[in-house]
Length: 630
Image (cartoon, rainbow, N blue to C red; front, side, top):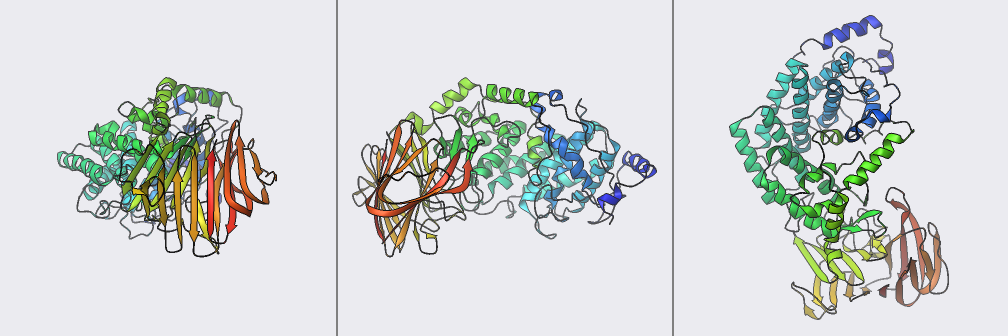
């Protein structure tokens, strides 16, 4: 196989032949690894003028800057080499080929800023890429991802959407007619496989990767718009009802690897449901969006200074989405969620306001900074496919009204317990605090125990991470073994732990929690503005508290030692204060102990000002902590 560097030195006569070949009908599908004529190079775009982009198409600018490098890394089989999208970057991974949509869009859409519209070299590259993509399909309609013989859910589900949207573009442009026929046949075979309720790859029992299943249903809505089929349409309607019954937890989240995952729920599955709803109007999808928004409203913590939302990420099972900025300019993976804001007004609280997005786009257009290519792997084509339908972002007024309706802002006194598959998701609101916990059977990368603490004026003070033994609210045993990295069953009480058991309903007074394992028991008592935490361990351990601090915070141990934001400070004291604005949060433990506060590398929000710091207090196995909020 020739290197791309060698290919770029091909003669002009060779390129002329390739351009002519691209305008002919495509060759039939070939076996994987079959070499085409050398895929021609694309020249880089001339200087990009930001002012030429319509506001809603600004998301295409970094992809325009990325297109030539990505195409020029393709090999002679049509495989997108170079590691631009998905891993493993292997020829058998069908997900790597999803950028066929990107090539098709730039080929077919004339814009003042798009030099590749109608470009024969780009069409030749698209032809080769489609040839390789389609050659990976198994006879049953599925596609592989992690090995050539895999019949994969994700590559097949997402592939349905990308191939259907690519087919729509090719038909509108009248390009690659033979490839059009091949894609049409491939889509029909794929839908037949995907919509079969007996297919346990797609319809696991219980459903564990709901985002991947929903992607195929969204893709099927597009494919059936292009080529209606009554039998498949009936199967799709039944599939919508099935995923509504099996894909949503009784707690309200979408099932991912045994639990909840914020990134896959909010940034992948909800937009896929929106994509499906735009083309099907199926009411099950609205109901799913409403149920998830209810769960979301307890788990995104609004910062009073307007920075955005901190994420209760400790229960997430797969990825680590830690925050969402107040204004999320293009490209934004959650953008298509606006689709549900009319039927689910509360969802507007978590969208960028229409006026704020317009301001951000005006600033982008006025910037003189060059538009640079996207980083490899950070090139999701979903950003582009979800920008095809117009926009309906909420106004500032609508968003403000939705924010006021968030449960922890609307009420100052409640206990909300949501359960699913042996997991408890607990939310306790009192006038001076909002406390979260995740108990029971730990799922995958999640961390159990108390997960966040929020104050109405100071915002988030404590927020644990998932998949990190150094950043969870835990009792940590020698060897950095936290109790949070395991199952922690809990019981709940009206008043102090051990009192009358709580089984539901409002708790106007104190609320108690007792949780633990064979090595440690933790009792929690929550009152109006105080949390009492009592730890009884069978060995020496360390209290570990994941603080979220801001540069202006005044940090002081009770012995007078001032701690440094972004540094590490040790003192022997019986407490620690965080003063933020006019609010002081006081941490008091029962006896003077050596304590250390140290900054970690994790930062929050676009400006990176907020930063994770760990407060660690070693003890001999018995530890009492009182947190006074304000």
